[in-house]
Length: 176
Length: 187
Image (cartoon, rainbow over all chains, first blue to last red; front, top):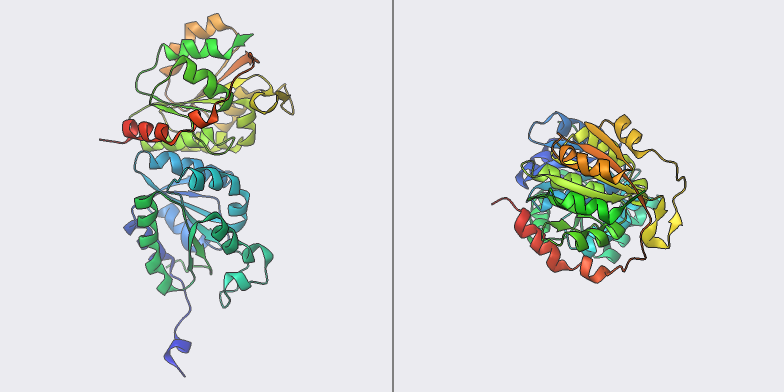
């Protein structure tokens, strides 16, 4: 058996949280998503290093993150892909047209991590990357532990260049 | 019935280094009354003004933030009342100019012109809630309102105004965002 085939295909919530801290994230703006609820949102809620703002609708996050950025405060918008789709106009106006550093972590509900999101049998998942491409928003798939290394540089770039970024969570992170 | 620009003139008498978030018709009236670098006019999508205001208030708890929102905008983001109340920024003052009209979008009526936004804010959990429909009383109390610990909410019942000129390229000028940031960033 090849080593790569035997390697565990897991995603550490703790590893993601460490990367968010390394990226200077202070505020997490969230509406619960079943993909990230147990492995990310729950431990973030218990972590005194973050200020968690629970919102009623995902597009609120875009305005809140923008307002925070004017005081050089970094925020992560933690939502499900359905909430991303619901927030497209806010992301269009604030993140893209006004070139604001909006960092989104988006759970791909129903995604099969063995497949690329574009090949997902689920329509809602399949259209996410093409929409991001059309909007000119940088995006990264976070599906296995090795992908966690993409997070901090993506956040740093978003704030350095004042532009949005989407981090697509392709499987349920483990809480530990 | 009060006029929005008259209310804003009274409010402007009390301003110092606050950020003022104003959009659409409120922004047109506000920039005429109080043109200043600390006006935050670019919200990107209707309804987000209250959310931008929350972000500004959280980012600079040492400075006050005043949101001048229209009733149509708040209706697009009613959940923000709950989010703001839960986040409880002591430095956020949230005014809603209620004229029962989508004024910037053809002066069409909002779905229900009998809404009681102050009661909604109270139920959501704002620390202090006011409702003004008399300019003389607003003049007497506006200073007191601005001194309250937030989040504070106040409805201003206003009549639709004269036809406004919406100069969006000027309101949304990127240079205005830069000027705002230069004065809002912590030093």
